[in-house]
Amino acid sequence: MKKIIVLIAFMNMCSVMVRAQHNVLSVGAANALTIKTSTIFSADSLVLTPGSDFTMSSNAILETPVPALVPGSSITRVYYLNNPIVFTGTVEIYYQLSELNGNTESSLKYYDSTVGSLWTMAVASTVNTASHYVQFVTSAQSFVAATAANNISALPIQLISFKGNWDGNQTNLTWIFEHHGEEINFTVESSTDGQNWRAIAVVPGVLSFTKQIYHYSDMDAQFSSRLYRIKIVNASGKASYSPIIEIHKTGSTNNIRVVPRTNSMIIYFIGDQPTAVRVLNVSGQTIWRSNMSRNEYEVNNLLKGIYFIQYELNGQIYVKKFPLLQ
Image 1: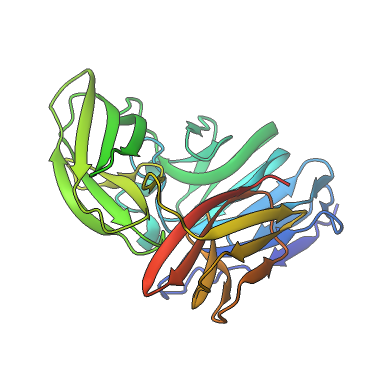
Image 2: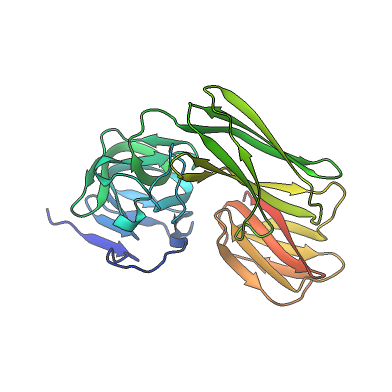
């Protein structure tokens, strides 16, 4: 049977351009995308060949060069979906040699995730070092993210939790880390917009085979809302990142109210008007912006998920985290 090939924004693998994260594909609720059996469907360099008719709706695919913690670090080509899919057929991820990120190509395995942070290796996956892709033949596999990395039998690093709070004078951060005898250092980073990060402290890790609790207090109080993350660096120099948390000062106000609508949100400002407003998705990508000073903004064509509303008010930049559940 002759196969049909569908290409969506396929990346030229010979390209040497510096990549940034980008949306590969968006599918709304009204216009579902159906890939017929044995059709080769390529979205960027994520290639799906379904074993039976496969339909996507109310979903989107994001590609990012930020490696995932799988454990260790993946290649610098990671795909995330807005909502999980259940897929039967062949999954392939093509990559460039410059994206190996310290991984040995001949030992690459396909990894996917059902939540986007806990990754599972596909033992039966294979790698093609001539055409540079990993391949996995799956049956009813549920996943919301996919990448490739080396087969690491032992967990060298494992972040158990990361939390923070404002105590009236400073931001207190706490994280729990399970060590496996490897030298680890932690860099605390902060941001006001989710895109530009600043290293504010380095906390040395304890050489241990047990769980350890770490603390750091940020004395900089010049904010009303701030984002934090932990950069985890092992002895070989490979880095991975914790989830991002948002800290609000007790009693502070952002002068903002957000009203959710179906696939949209209305942003109201009470009192002073902002000079600029942006909406970012959970990966830090700007999906909407306005440089007009108003009291009300409407943002449409949104999928369910977490968003960050960044705005400039009276010369300062603020960030508000908002979950769109509709």
